[in-house]
Image 1 (cartoon, rainbow, N blue to C red):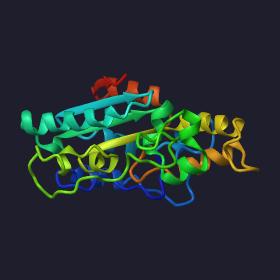
Image 2: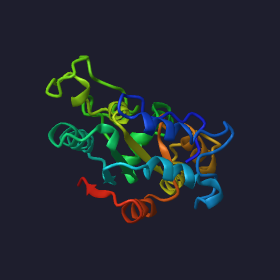
Image 3: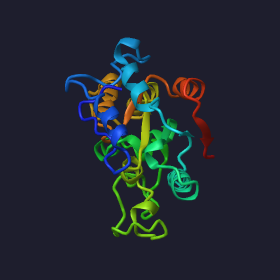
Image 4: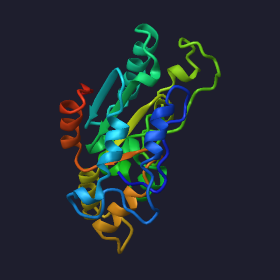
Amino acid sequence: MKRSTFIGTTAAGAGSMTAAVAAMSCATDVVPGGTNLVERRANFDLAGFDRTLGRVVDYRLLYEAVTFVPSLLNNVKNSINGLQFGFDVDPVRIVTAIAGHGPSSTYAYSDAVIAKYHVGEYFGLKDPTTGEPLTKNIFLAKRATSASTDPDDEHGSYQDTSVEALQARGAIFLTCHTAVEEQARGIVKKGFAPSGMTASDVAVDMLTHLIPGAVVVPSMVATIAVLQTKYHYAYLTIA
C-alpha cells in the first residue's frame, strides 16, 4: 500500500478520491507491503485503504481479473459510462476497483518492469500489433485525441479505455503483494532476472516501480473478501 510516488486520480469529479489516495503517500525508502512473502499488518496502511476504497459513495464496483483479457478495460469504461450517463449518477459517487492478479497484475506494471523482467514472455502476453511478447505497458497511456464532452465521441475521454483514462475517472488499480512476491520467484527461476538478482531483489524492484496510483494490498483474494463483505462492492469478473 505504501508508495513513494503515489498519485491519485486527477479528473474533475474525482476530487475526494484524489485527496484520499494522496494521503497514502509515504517515505521514499519504504517498500509497498514490505519485503516478506506474506505481507504483515505493520506494512499495510489499513487506514489509508479504508479511506480510499471505503469512502462514502453510492456505487462500488469490483472487477476481478486473473487471466489477461484486455476487454476488461472496455467493460470498466462501459460500467462507468452507464452509471454516469444512463443512470445519471454523479461520477464522484462511483468507485471502481480493478483487482488484477496472476497475468492481470501486468496492468499495474511500469514499462521498466515489463521490459527488465520479460513479463510478456513470462506470462505469454503478446502485443496485438506485432504479435511479439509485450515489452511495455501498452494499456497505460491515455489515447483520447479529442477534448469533446460528448460521450459518443470515439476519440474522446469517455471512450478511452486506457488505464490512465480510467484512473482519471476514479478507477483504482490494485496490486497483490503476494502475487508480486510469487512472480518474482518464478521470474528468477526462469532466468528472466538480471544476473545476481535474488527473488527478493526482484520483488522489491517491481513493488517500487508500479504505475502511478497503484494500490498494493496484502493478498488479492483476501482483499476481494474485504471489499465485498465490509464495503458491499458489486463483484464482476471477466473470463
